[in-house]
Length: 117
Image (tube, rainbow, N blue to C red):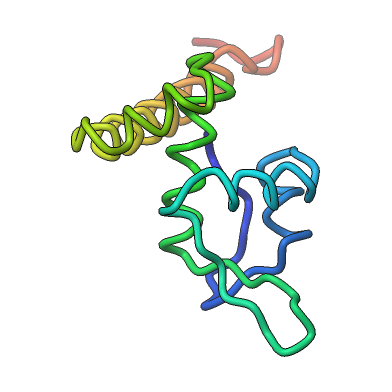
């Protein structure tokens, strides 16, 4: 999953929800369910996610939404399998390579009709 977020120190819960295409209530719920997800809060209680929070959230999202784990299953996987982060990173890289290859393919097949090879 490729996130469309600018490089910043902190992201609002709305920005994160939009990037992951989930509701803000789901992020607040996951915050209660997963100890590794702890966004900072200001005096008003607004949540601000760090890049590390986004990394953890991406792992949770991968397990729950993409792999179909239950919340308990995802929690167990996070505590017992240290390779999950590496797997998610590898999936991101592969998706990037796939997108680049698709762009290359599209550019090769979109030649004008009157152009000679």
